[in-house]
Amino acid sequence: MDTKNPPDFRWEGAKCEAYHAAGVSIGIMHLDHLFNDTKNCDKYMNDLRKTVEEIEARTQFLGEQGVKTLEIMRKFINHPSFDDITYSLQN
Image (cartoon, rainbow, N blue to C red; front, side, top):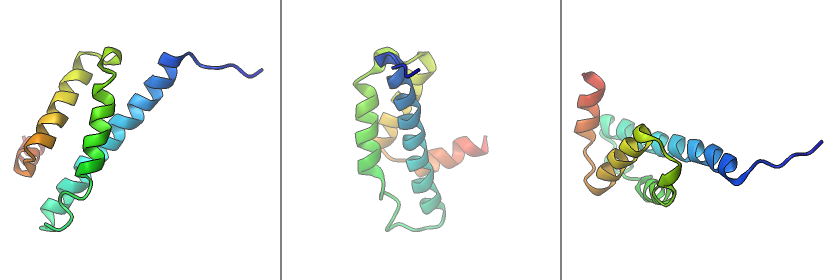
């Protein structure tokens, strides 16, 4: 039997994938920063910006922690600070 998921369920999966993609983008750019690969440090910034914009358009589906994470991602996009990421990972 073939059943269809309600729209909010499909968004839940897309939200998880979008959050994962955003986190991976930040992680790869941070790794490039650690390797002093300045050429590639912002390679995924446009993709990250687009993904975060898509998530921001559907914040009604986010919990409190999801909103906080989204705000942190937006701050990173507006003012990238790889040193802040390194600091937070060390503490």
